[in-house]
Length: 289
Ligand code: PXG
Image 1 (cartoon, rainbow, N blue to C red):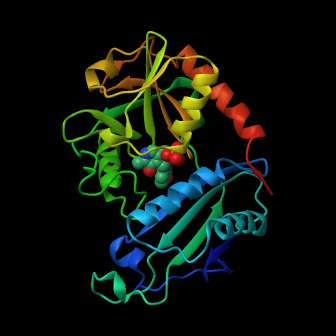
Image 2 (tube, rainbow, N blue to C red; image 1 turned 180 degrees about the vertical axis):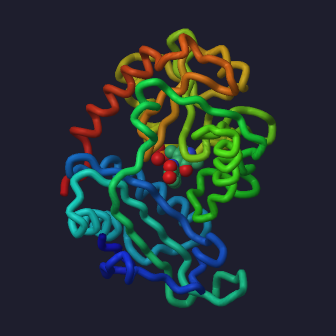
């Protein structure tokens, strides 16, 4: 495996970052998770747009232009000879000293690209559907740390994940401080009620997921009425279908929430249709390398 750091490739053993890097000291940076399918990078521009928006929001100047970054991602995929891959793109504010003041980062940002094989949920969960559980940790309030910023500080999500794992579940449902459904720790959530599709709006505390946007586009093409609308756990419990979306997870059906069976208890018909259309899209759309 060859890892890209600031314009050069290193072996996994030699790929090292300073302990004074702000990403390590404070989680001061941003990241993206991108997928490629059959030598096509899926939604590369959308992921890079979000990366640069996150960086802009935290006043981090990325040392590469967006076009240079796109080239670096493709170079990392080629260097590692990967046809199907998961790319983790990490940008930190760079090396500083032990103080919080970002003006100490004189050397500019650190850019790391790891291109690896994909790690999915177990295949059985895609076929049978997964069970999720609501956790006590609420999603970050946007006025404290906006969930739209894909920052290197993912402790909010990790704490949610730990709670789910401790209870024997793979994924956690996170609410906001008003008790509305936001998303899961690394995936967006959707439900279907009377053949209409619902997902919480961004302002409720959900990341604007690239897969989420793709699903909304597919639903529009299939003429499925879709809504970015607030909902509570009750509405989710009595919904007909539920699924999660994310770059790593793709679309995964959910059949139980907090012990309540969703619909028939099997992956829903519309969920399966959306999964089929999503896979079709990943085979045909993307930046070729
Ligand atoms: N919500 C959150 C909080 C995320 O971090 C998504 C939704 C889905 O967004 P995309 O754009 O991928 O459709 C994410 C992103 C992991 C992992 O290891 C997953 C994400 C980020 C980091 C790690 O599963 N998902």
